[in-house]
Length: 161
Image (cartoon, rainbow, N blue to C red; front, side, top):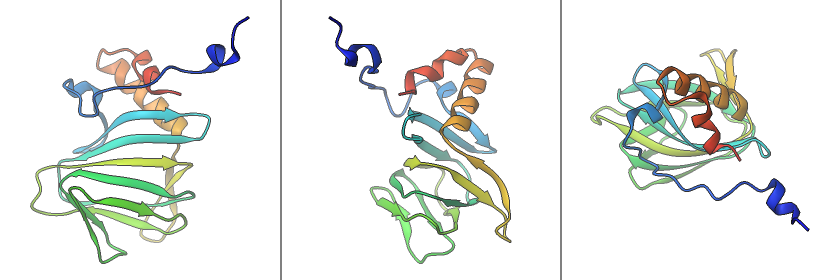
């Protein structure tokens, strides 16, 4: 008799967080990329690296669940707070507050691991909605990018659990 876990469980996921192939990084905007690590459709969760190669305001956003982060390289802060997240820092963001993410001057690159569950709502300076992201919009974005760069749309599937 087959164990139900064998039918439904996905295998372990182990991958190089910082890939050798630049095509694995998915562009979000000018000088901003995401590298997926885990896309959990059951929990509505995505874990990815955010890489930024420019200083300045990246996004103003709100989220419905806590977000966890770990800075691998560079530094960044939120306009709404008096702290700066630097290499080696862990970040806990409570839900419900609007944050304006700013990458600090003097760093040629910022890389932060983010663990997000639920929806990210992007807003303008008047707090009007501009758009949103969730695990499913991320999957669509990743599949489209990987098809365009020759890795194939199914390349994203390895991250889906």
